[in-house]
Length: 343
Image (cartoon, rainbow, N blue to C red; front, side, top):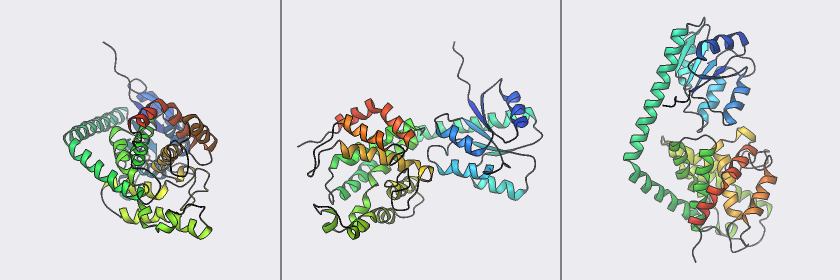
């Protein structure tokens, strides 16, 4: 009988001695990785080495534990990871702040090995139970989710009727987005939500005048400025709602034209300032646009499209997501074939 793989604990602390103590306590039961500051911790996690739980020091220079936690919980691909704050002393207000940011618990220094192990075991077990519960709920509501997806896809297609896109575009790019979401660390539930949110990326085009959106020639400066407002219009159409799906859809609508180098619109965000779901949609949307025939152009070959996306890595696109997209290309091409255009 094979032994089950050890779960991974990420320790984030600017004091090497504290890391050494925690590693000594945990290395027998877990795979342990460490970072000496919040910035390096985020780089480790975003590079694909996602831990099962994080022990996060509160007081650190440059980026404290609260700021790290806030960034993690704001990212749909990372927010599920349980975070336990580690601190020498915390007031009630400190603890409330941590819990309001999404932390699971606090561990206090000096370290008690039995307490640390018990807390980690408890929160990993709770996380596993929650995941299993979510799996069961998702299985029972599969038909409802499929109906919801079809409605959203049709709403997304409504925007395409205002443009020179085709009905299959929103379906293909949504599936490409899901594939890239999984590759970048999303769990199945999050990736399915992205699949549902992606068709809403251009919903704001409904609010753009036909004389602009259907203009056969190049847009002038004033027309281009108007066209760019489709991001804000889309966000306004989707509105503010407690639904996690609609929250994600609003982010997608607002950020899918932002660029990695900061030259995109509407807000000129750059690099990790752009929510990951927006960066994912950017790659998926452009790839499908390039490889699809339009009234004004022939379809590019897959090789030519990939060459352009590679050249734009670090400029238009998140270079890490580009590398993941290329690795997932065989799966992407299966989707392309499945949902090809019909005459």
